[in-house]
Amino acid sequence: MDTVDTPAAQKLTGKDSIFTTLKQDGPFACGEDVAVPAPFSREARQWVRNHCRLQTDITKYRSVRNQIFEFLDIRSFAEIPYLLGESNDKDKRRDRGTKLLGNMFGIHGNIGEVEAKLKEYAGTANDVITYLRTKVLAPYSSHIETTNEIQLTNHPLDLLLIIFNNRYHKKARFEAKRKLTLMNLAGSIDQRERETNIEQKFADFLSFLNEYVWSPSLKIGELEIVYLVSTHKPESFSCTDVEVVKEDKLSSLDDVFGRKITLIKRRRFTSGGREHPIYVTVRKKSAEAKVLKLLRKNEKNPAVAVDDELGLMAVLNTTSDVKQFQQHLTNSALKIHSFMTLEDISDSLTGQRYTNSAVGSSPKTQMLKFFARLGGIRVEFILHTNTSYLNYIYQRDVAHDEYEVKRIFDTGVASLLFPPDIYALDHTKIKHRQLSRFRRQIENF
Image (cartoon, rainbow, N blue to C red; front, side, top):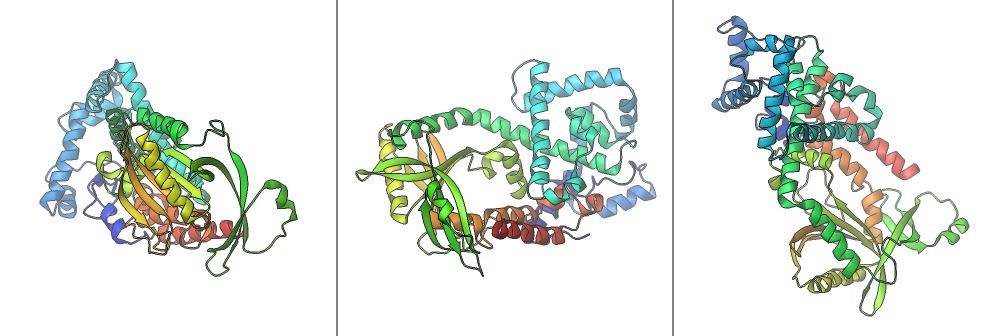
């Protein structure tokens, strides 16, 4: 079975991967049976030749092995069969492990409160797989469905012991190991969010928008529904013309190939003495989205890899309106006695090529993208015109649905989470099938 072979995928699944435990060609690969070779045996020597050629490999292996021993409170793998059978002793070790994890992730409270957090991390781990099953890999949902026992197991100690339990199938043991990895990333993300007080910052940002950015002529949450009626080139499906139409005018439109009708719900802001309509979506990046970003970046530290926790995407009629909104944001920040500085600006609305380094992104993408620092928060802004927004949804090689497919496969995330030898999937073929599938949905739906 094939995997997608790109530089980014090689980084995640190759020798430079920091997710060593998930690699099926590494020292922690799940085989058909659980086997711990006796020291100095022929199998052990062969294992060393296969996986311990470099000092870095040896260091990574010893680091993970020691963590396993410390968490289970054992001295060797030979003690694990005892833990699989002794439930009373296992309960004590589970409580001990809960306290250790609570301290590691800075979770304050009693054992029950820490276990509730661990269950939350387990839910995030499940959500990562559910997201891929329902979106990027939807036609293959039954192929990659998580084993029921793993889906319902939430404590790290129980998942760790499953990995060493020969009663569980190879797929279930791998999924237990995968869930542990995803839970660890979820814990790091939650710790980072608590340290940065991201929930309060998100609430403050929404309050800032409602008090100082949006026009008071509309109530908070009041939206005006309009439709973008657009025509698209048959060879690229890029937008050639767009008209803003109200619902009562839709019935007079004929069905034409290449025409799309897109509903948007708009607010207003006041600038230059008049009101401007604006479609806007504000988001706080979900935990599962952050986990996937850490995987794509081959990174375990959310402070390094996740710089877009808060974001706003806006769609305006013209590039002139975009500039008006940008200036309006600066003026609005002054009302809360704050400067607004722009960082990492990328502007391809005016014809320049998009230079984002993200794997899977297209140089044909049109948008104004920047980070704004104001009022003690840092927010990612993505600003579109009606035309660039429609290209962002529909244009070939640019559409966001296609981008999501490319970045999951081209970064190696699909191969890492669903290794071909366990799930019997050809990732190269699936990638092309999914790109074709989304393209058909976009152009024919």
